Image (cartoon, rainbow, N blue to C red):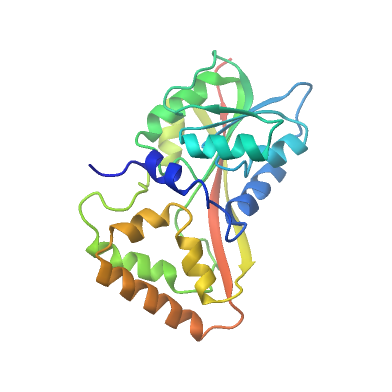
Length: 257
């Protein structure tokens, strides 16, 4: 049986975001762009991981509830953030009453769930009228953006060696899905992050600690070895060594009165 997304992140919970502060870096960029919380402003973070968005949102004054469907992630977040309300929960079925939250966030989660439309409907249900849904996903390359390594091209090239349903992550129509669920899409913003790499091996180790691990595990062993060799060879000719990535931040508002 193929390993589910939840199983993958449960397996990786002990090393997730340890090698480089990637998810926490993007999480802070998202939290900085949230509106100022009103009195007792409530925020729900789904697929919270280690609290990349939840922790800085709490620092900004939000009353934060963090959920994740992977038991290992929930256990680690509870251990690292003992004062945070952390719950084991699948975003397809949010165990909260209607109109519970002012803001819902999701950092690099929506493209990984099995049914993005169902999650968006649930988010709409638990948000108050006028509430904000802010989430990040990969997507088209922004104008003027340049990668500082060749990994993205390698992922595209080696995809042909994956078995059926290998890897994970499915693009979806963000704007259309939001509108169909009753949201008013407000804006789409590209966020960018540069992280220095100590050496080429650091990038390879980083790929072992999050969703790309499933892709690499699904490659035939000889192709995985070739991927690693070509990745390290590519970085050997680059200075300085940098992980440069982007995400798209989508913000939408509940339109019901």
